[in-house]
Length: 387
Image (cartoon, rainbow, N blue to C red):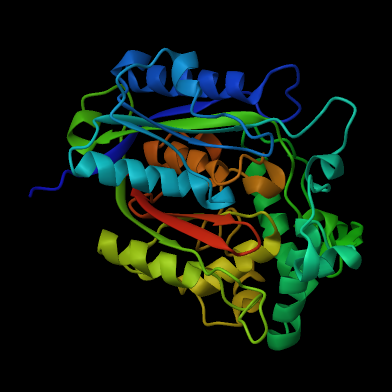
């Protein structure tokens, strides 16, 4: 059977940040319509729809009716948390490659911010707590992602000598990238001293080690590479993908904090694409925390295990560095739409539409998505090269 190569042909991004008085479903529908129009397609040209639910449980599969889509060949809801967007694109690409659909929209939307609430209110409360022994962590107040990621970072610190200043170099570099991103929420230049002076959220993580909270939606249209070349925008080819779901990453004698699913998903995606880390021109990494970037770099093989701190300390990820990373500012400085934040920037860069922040080389773009507390990982290898 001949397998068709695939590409991202349309991109839709709504207003992001403090966007109120709109439901997640409404935002999701707007993102899909924007993505279709961006590609030069009518919404009715779509025969596939993949949705990822946010914290508010929307959008659901009922988005099909909101968009007026009938007789879809592919419809599913994918829930792997921050790994969902990359997983959706890989699922769409595989389906299209095997002839199961021809144009698939992948969309995420969320509205965790409320007009009178705070970012802490958005993700700091659990709607329900586990019972029995599984609830032990609630008894000591460990009920937010900040605390669990702090545990992971602390283990990396103690095992390898990683420092807070090294994590700070990631935050400083991404803020510098955000300065040239029109949609970034934080553009004011950031110094390492300012990073270190920001409040500790959960030792060793400072406030500026943690991602933003945003309302908004993003969508892409995946189709065959051949068809994409006849549409309105420069295509961004999907060369490879991989997933890994470690499972119970915090059990005794586990590698929690030291190794993530990126160690399996990254090499798998590179193999499928027929490239190695030395071929990668650009990284767009899931950065829920600066630590997430660090461990992903190690697990993808850009530096030896345990040397991530030293690897990033010289600013190589920042503008002018040798390995551009999170060129829109990422989730730390731009906006947070789970794994769609790095995907949106990868598409913009792949098209050559990033303006003042555009990188010179975009032949191989590696994108990551991470879900839960290092529980899920999905990797994409994309290309903006004309083929």
